[in-house]
Amino acid sequence: MLYQSMNTIALFTALNIIVLIWLGTLRNPLKALYVLVRELVTTPRFLILFVSMAGILLLNKYEQQIEQDYFRNQTDFTPMIFQWEGSFVRHLQDFFYSPWITPVLAYFYLLVFQALIIGSLGVYLIQQNKALVYSTCYAILINYAIAIPFYLLFPVNEVWSYPPAGVTFHMLDVFPDFETIYRPLSGLDNCFPSLHTSLSMTMALLSFRSGNKRWMIITGVSAALIIFSIFYLGIHWASDMFAGLVLSFLASAAGIYLGRLTHARATRLPQFSNAA
Image 1 (spheres, rainbow, N blue to C red):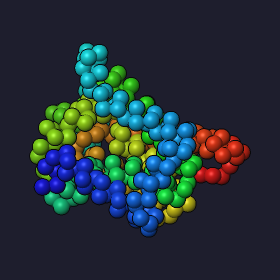
Image 2: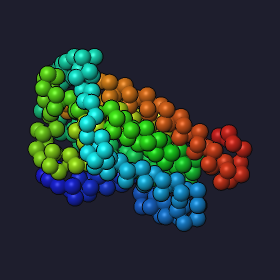
Image 3: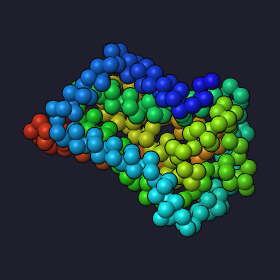
């Protein structure tokens, strides 16, 4: 079974990364690993940025523990979100539901999402597009740096877990042990903003600066399916998605600016070169 353990999920995510990098470059995906190691060893700016990105991802991993220790008495904003939206997600589920759609969207939500982020770095590393490598790292860092405080101070529960919404958690149709195997990676009240929306859209927006039409199509289609999956599977509210979209535009714009600036300083090029 595809989702029987985190080891299986990690394996198939790695396979997706390899396939995405190959589709995006038509070159040996393992070259991305070689270039990554070389850049970490030879470029101090990239090493600092990469370590910072790893740090924010580690902080996100422990966010739930921080929330339990220091923010356990926060107000639940889920009823307020439901008052704004009503039964939008339930109506969308009812209209589009089909047994064959569920495993496809679960695959994109669980596996393609993670692979798209790492694959983007791999594609730009192979293409030697250092400005976009920097931009992607900055954008990922910004996404998490803005989202984590919301998760701590503005908790919103996933839509399926709020009974008045009448939403079905279709993820369980293909991943029955989701709550025991995958849930530790993401808190039930870490909804607003939707990082699945913001990160997938960020990767798509950055790809539009790459000049790689094939990669633009891959990231654009993947982002659209991932965003649709958050509703279809019964995970996010529309408010989470809109907040995620706003975050994606902010993070990608800031990431591009900082990526170009870092690349310009590293290579002593004019600050606003067309490197990206």
